Image (cartoon, rainbow, N blue to C red; front, top):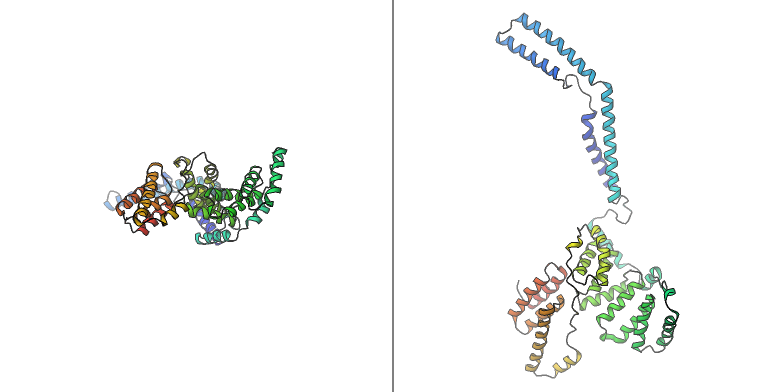
Length: 417
């Protein structure tokens, strides 16, 4: 309320300052008439002539009398021209100007601003808004509640051929009877998702990850994340967030996970973070890809809410990101444990060389560059690690999240700026 009182007082004072000259009546002798000014100048000239002796006292008196008569006549005529009729019109016009100005100001604010402080964008400081967003994120509904509230299960079932549905019904009956059979759960998750039964697809994909355990791939987790968000019609639940964080922990630049992170922030009143994440998705993925398309459809809205100037032409897609390296396999680790120091060093050097060649030729994620920097430091190739660090900083210039990963690895390795 205080905000509106201040704004109203400022608007009123500004309007009064504008209309004051139109409201004030013309005072006698201030009509601006050229004749009046001329006669006054003549009276002054008579006094100067009298002082210089050009006129005697009688001549000066007669001249003053004549000029005074003409001055009074001119002043009366000018006063009639600026009489009550023009003054009333001037005051009416001033009131109209004030009313139109205030109406236009409020009209523009109603169109672009947030008049209702109890609406979706109440009057809050930045710190309060961030705290409110964090609270919103911490207290959002669970996956199952979101599925019950927002889910669209069965929305497209009528478009599915009966024989295909019959096959899925058979899977639904058979797979739970063999809960440790991985392939059955994979098939059920795939086909439930294809018919739009995303909640059931989510349950099946959860079983896939349970059975795979540590062998579950990023693709498995992204598949679960896709199904979870689809099951809630776009809502990112706390459970979906955990899966997303697991993916980002392995691959910080993962496009699907970064898209869903942006979606989470967009839903919890942090459009600034959503904008940065989605811009990164557009810059680091295939523009024809699914997640780039989803981000592109929403980024203008979050950019506006964040106060960012978004120009679609400023986005330069870098194409699909290469798949992250999975690191040494269990067999590699077992073999390395049985090697002597020299053979083990050769093996590590070979893996480092392979990673270095791949990054040089195909590019990679920030975590892969960080891994290479760390490995070279361990091998005491500090100069080469410093060179790789500079290349990585150049490759990821302007991408703050990726640079943080690279700089963290450089700091841990003890490399300088």
